[in-house]
Amino acid sequence: MNINMTFFGQMITFAILIWFTMKFIWPPLNKAIEERQQKIAQGLANAEGAEVLIQQARAQADEIVREARVKANEVVEQAHSRANQIVDQAKTDAMVEGTRLKALADAEIAAAADRAREDLRKQVSALAVTGAEKLLKREIDANAHKALLDELAAEI
Image 1 (cartoon, helix red, strand yellow):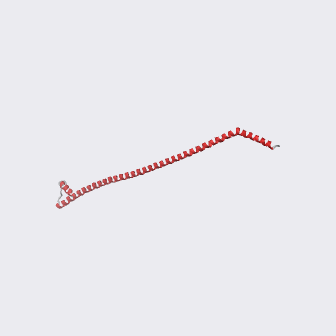
Image 2 (cartoon, helix red, strand yellow):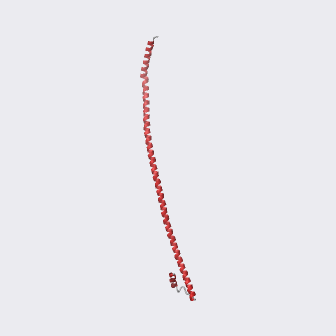
Image 3 (tube, helix red, strand yellow):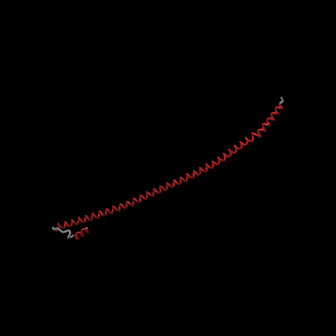
């Protein structure tokens, strides 16, 4: 056996294998590799786009939360302000009601004092008439001397 012929036969067979591989196997394999690379590149681009969208969504969410907090603080401040207004109004109403009740009580006291004075005047008049009767030892007619008794009561 000749090694050179075997070697030469192997080279021809290898060349035919390379030609067949380059003609029929390599193009579909190369096409599949390129498609896979494109899919990977597109997936990476989509991932980067999604990352940007996620960052934008986070920024929007943070902004919405910040605005919600500001609005919540405004609502709380308005509630405190309204509560203070209600308390102040209640104080004012209570003071007005207290003043009104005090004036009413003062009027009742004044009326009671006037009634007491009038009753006292009548009692003093009656006592004066009784005292005068005892002094004069005779009865004085109260109806006949009403003007005099009224004048006496007014002086007292």
